[in-house]
Length: 230
Image (cartoon, rainbow, N blue to C red; front, side):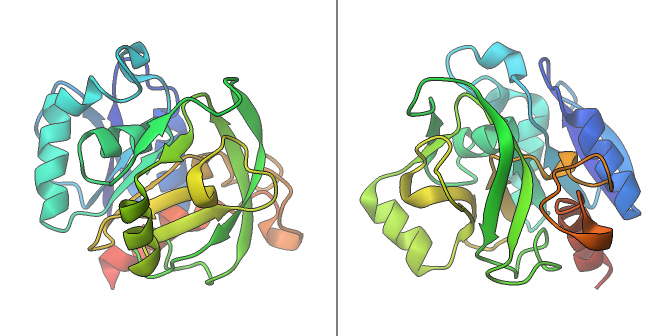
Protein backbone atom coordinates (compact mmCIF):
# COMPACT_ATOMS: atom_id res chain seq x y z
CA UNK A 1 0.00 0.00 0.00
CA UNK A 2 1.24 3.48 -0.93
CA UNK A 3 0.98 6.20 1.73
CA UNK A 4 1.69 9.78 0.70
CA UNK A 5 3.68 12.01 3.06
CA UNK A 6 3.44 15.73 2.32
CA UNK A 7 6.40 18.10 2.57
CA UNK A 8 5.66 21.79 3.08
CA UNK A 9 8.30 24.51 3.51
CA UNK A 10 9.09 24.12 7.20
CA UNK A 11 8.02 20.49 7.61
CA UNK A 12 10.22 18.74 10.17
CA UNK A 13 8.79 15.27 10.57
CA UNK A 14 8.08 14.20 7.00
CA UNK A 15 11.03 11.81 6.90
CA UNK A 16 10.08 10.37 10.28
CA UNK A 17 6.54 9.75 9.03
CA UNK A 18 7.87 8.11 5.86
CA UNK A 19 10.12 5.88 7.95
CA UNK A 20 7.16 4.88 10.14
CA UNK A 21 5.19 3.88 7.04
CA UNK A 22 8.14 1.82 5.81
CA UNK A 23 8.58 0.09 9.17
CA UNK A 24 4.88 -0.77 9.18
CA UNK A 25 5.28 -2.50 5.81
CA UNK A 26 3.95 0.21 3.49
CA UNK A 27 5.50 2.24 0.70
CA UNK A 28 5.93 5.92 1.55
CA UNK A 29 5.41 8.32 -1.35
CA UNK A 30 6.76 11.86 -1.16
CA UNK A 31 4.17 14.53 -1.97
CA UNK A 32 5.24 18.14 -2.60
CA UNK A 33 3.17 21.08 -1.36
CA UNK A 34 3.15 22.81 -4.76
CA UNK A 35 2.07 19.69 -6.69
CA UNK A 36 -1.67 19.01 -6.78
CA UNK A 37 -1.12 15.43 -8.00
CA UNK A 38 -1.49 12.83 -5.23
CA UNK A 39 0.14 10.20 -7.47
CA UNK A 40 -2.46 7.54 -6.79
CA UNK A 41 -1.67 7.06 -3.09
CA UNK A 42 -3.97 5.00 -0.88
CA UNK A 43 -3.69 7.29 2.17
CA UNK A 44 -2.03 10.58 3.12
CA UNK A 45 -0.12 11.86 6.15
CA UNK A 46 0.28 15.56 6.87
CA UNK A 47 3.36 15.64 9.14
CA UNK A 48 4.49 17.93 11.91
CA UNK A 49 6.67 20.99 11.71
CA UNK A 50 6.16 24.70 11.09
CA UNK A 51 4.77 24.89 7.56
CA UNK A 52 5.46 28.28 6.00
CA UNK A 53 6.97 29.33 9.34
CA UNK A 54 3.50 29.30 10.97
CA UNK A 55 3.06 32.83 9.60
CA UNK A 56 -0.42 34.32 10.13
CA UNK A 57 -1.18 31.30 12.36
CA UNK A 58 -0.26 27.64 12.38
CA UNK A 59 -1.44 25.89 9.21
CA UNK A 60 -3.14 28.96 7.76
CA UNK A 61 -1.01 29.29 4.62
CA UNK A 62 -0.70 25.53 4.03
CA UNK A 63 -4.48 25.49 3.73
CA UNK A 64 -4.08 27.10 0.29
CA UNK A 65 -1.29 24.87 -1.04
CA UNK A 66 -2.18 23.00 -4.25
CA UNK A 67 -1.66 19.62 -2.58
CA UNK A 68 -4.06 20.54 0.23
CA UNK A 69 -6.88 21.20 -2.21
CA UNK A 70 -6.40 17.74 -3.69
CA UNK A 71 -6.29 16.16 -0.24
CA UNK A 72 -9.51 17.88 0.80
CA UNK A 73 -11.30 16.57 -2.29
CA UNK A 74 -9.92 13.05 -1.87
CA UNK A 75 -10.73 12.99 1.85
CA UNK A 76 -14.32 13.87 1.14
CA UNK A 77 -14.35 10.83 -1.14
CA UNK A 78 -13.09 8.58 1.67
CA UNK A 79 -9.28 8.72 1.41
CA UNK A 80 -7.69 8.03 4.82
CA UNK A 81 -5.87 11.17 6.01
CA UNK A 82 -3.82 11.61 9.17
CA UNK A 83 -2.69 15.02 10.41
CA UNK A 84 0.04 15.03 13.05
CA UNK A 85 0.73 18.23 15.03
CA UNK A 86 1.11 20.86 12.29
CA UNK A 87 -0.84 18.47 10.07
CA UNK A 88 -3.71 18.60 12.59
CA UNK A 89 -3.55 22.38 12.49
CA UNK A 90 -3.75 22.30 8.68
CA UNK A 91 -6.76 19.97 8.76
CA UNK A 92 -8.67 22.38 11.00
CA UNK A 93 -7.74 25.32 8.77
CA UNK A 94 -8.93 23.34 5.74
CA UNK A 95 -12.21 22.57 7.58
CA UNK A 96 -11.74 18.83 7.26
CA UNK A 97 -11.80 18.74 11.07
CA UNK A 98 -13.76 21.02 13.41
CA UNK A 99 -12.30 23.38 15.98
CA UNK A 100 -9.00 25.21 15.97
CA UNK A 101 -5.51 25.07 17.44
CA UNK A 102 -4.22 28.07 19.42
CA UNK A 103 -1.19 28.84 21.61
CA UNK A 104 -0.63 26.57 24.59
CA UNK A 105 -2.34 28.05 27.62
CA UNK A 106 1.03 28.49 29.39
CA UNK A 107 2.44 30.26 26.28
CA UNK A 108 5.51 27.99 26.16
CA UNK A 109 6.74 25.33 23.79
CA UNK A 110 6.27 21.87 25.31
CA UNK A 111 8.33 18.75 24.57
CA UNK A 112 7.67 15.62 26.64
CA UNK A 113 6.52 12.04 26.68
CA UNK A 114 2.75 12.05 26.79
CA UNK A 115 0.17 9.45 27.73
CA UNK A 116 -2.97 9.26 25.61
CA UNK A 117 -6.16 7.30 26.10
CA UNK A 118 -7.56 5.76 22.92
CA UNK A 119 -11.22 6.74 22.70
CA UNK A 120 -12.12 5.55 19.20
CA UNK A 121 -10.86 2.43 17.43
CA UNK A 122 -13.02 2.22 14.31
CA UNK A 123 -10.97 4.62 12.18
CA UNK A 124 -8.43 3.52 9.55
CA UNK A 125 -5.68 4.89 11.81
CA UNK A 126 -6.67 3.31 15.14
CA UNK A 127 -8.18 -0.10 14.41
CA UNK A 128 -5.26 -1.99 15.98
CA UNK A 129 -5.68 -0.27 19.36
CA UNK A 130 -8.11 -1.22 22.10
CA UNK A 131 -10.72 1.24 23.32
CA UNK A 132 -9.53 2.71 26.60
CA UNK A 133 -5.93 1.66 26.01
CA UNK A 134 -3.31 4.11 27.29
CA UNK A 135 -0.32 4.67 25.02
CA UNK A 136 2.78 6.85 25.33
CA UNK A 137 4.13 8.96 22.46
CA UNK A 138 6.18 12.16 22.24
CA UNK A 139 4.49 15.57 22.28
CA UNK A 140 6.12 18.78 21.01
CA UNK A 141 4.18 21.92 20.16
CA UNK A 142 3.58 25.58 20.91
CA UNK A 143 0.16 25.89 19.24
CA UNK A 144 -1.32 22.73 20.68
CA UNK A 145 -4.39 23.93 22.56
CA UNK A 146 -7.48 22.47 20.91
CA UNK A 147 -10.50 24.74 21.17
CA UNK A 148 -14.06 24.74 19.83
CA UNK A 149 -17.42 26.17 20.84
CA UNK A 150 -19.49 24.19 23.31
CA UNK A 151 -21.94 22.99 20.65
CA UNK A 152 -19.11 21.54 18.56
CA UNK A 153 -17.51 19.93 21.59
CA UNK A 154 -20.84 18.37 22.59
CA UNK A 155 -21.29 17.05 19.04
CA UNK A 156 -17.82 15.52 19.03
CA UNK A 157 -18.51 13.83 22.34
CA UNK A 158 -21.99 12.68 21.39
CA UNK A 159 -20.93 11.30 18.02
CA UNK A 160 -17.86 9.53 19.41
CA UNK A 161 -15.45 11.63 17.37
CA UNK A 162 -12.94 12.30 20.12
CA UNK A 163 -10.21 9.84 19.13
CA UNK A 164 -7.59 10.56 21.81
CA UNK A 165 -7.59 12.27 25.18
CA UNK A 166 -4.69 13.41 27.32
CA UNK A 167 -4.07 11.33 30.44
CA UNK A 168 -2.71 13.05 33.53
CA UNK A 169 -1.72 16.69 33.39
CA UNK A 170 -3.12 18.50 30.36
CA UNK A 171 0.05 19.66 28.56
CA UNK A 172 -1.37 22.58 26.58
CA UNK A 173 -4.83 23.47 27.93
CA UNK A 174 -6.79 21.64 25.24
CA UNK A 175 -10.48 21.81 26.04
CA UNK A 176 -11.91 18.64 27.58
CA UNK A 177 -8.40 17.12 27.42
CA UNK A 178 -8.88 16.45 23.70
CA UNK A 179 -5.70 15.32 21.96
CA UNK A 180 -7.21 14.13 18.67
CA UNK A 181 -10.49 14.10 16.76
CA UNK A 182 -11.97 12.68 13.56
CA UNK A 183 -14.40 13.79 10.90
CA UNK A 184 -17.91 12.32 10.77
CA UNK A 185 -16.91 9.54 8.40
CA UNK A 186 -13.87 8.62 10.48
CA UNK A 187 -11.38 8.53 7.61
CA UNK A 188 -9.75 11.83 8.64
CA UNK A 189 -7.95 11.92 12.00
CA UNK A 190 -5.85 14.67 13.54
CA UNK A 191 -3.82 14.65 16.75
CA UNK A 192 -1.15 16.81 18.33
CA UNK A 193 1.27 14.17 19.71
CA UNK A 194 3.73 12.39 17.41
CA UNK A 195 3.19 8.63 16.90
CA UNK A 196 5.88 8.58 14.19
CA UNK A 197 8.48 9.12 16.93
CA UNK A 198 7.44 5.96 18.77
CA UNK A 199 7.84 3.19 16.20
CA UNK A 200 11.14 1.47 17.05
CA UNK A 201 12.17 -0.42 20.21
CA UNK A 202 14.77 1.49 22.17
CA UNK A 203 14.14 4.80 20.40
CA UNK A 204 10.65 5.82 21.57
CA UNK A 205 9.10 6.49 25.00
CA UNK A 206 9.22 3.54 27.37
CA UNK A 207 5.49 3.63 28.04
CA UNK A 208 4.88 0.01 27.06
CA UNK A 209 6.86 -2.82 28.59
CA UNK A 210 8.16 -5.89 26.82
CA UNK A 211 8.49 -6.29 23.05
CA UNK A 212 6.36 -3.21 22.33
CA UNK A 213 8.49 -0.91 24.46
CA UNK A 214 8.90 2.41 22.66
CA UNK A 215 6.61 1.41 19.79
CA UNK A 216 3.17 2.62 20.91
CA UNK A 217 2.89 4.77 17.79
CA UNK A 218 3.59 2.04 15.24
CA UNK A 219 0.01 0.78 15.20
CA UNK A 220 -1.18 4.03 13.63
CA UNK A 221 0.63 2.97 10.51
CA UNK A 222 -0.09 -0.75 10.63
CA UNK A 223 -3.74 0.15 11.25
CA UNK A 224 -4.09 2.11 8.03
CA UNK A 225 -2.36 -0.62 6.03
CA UNK A 226 -4.71 -3.19 7.54
CA UNK A 227 -7.74 -1.05 6.69
CA UNK A 228 -6.57 -0.64 3.08
CA UNK A 229 -6.05 -4.38 2.61
CA UNK A 230 -9.27 -5.38 4.36
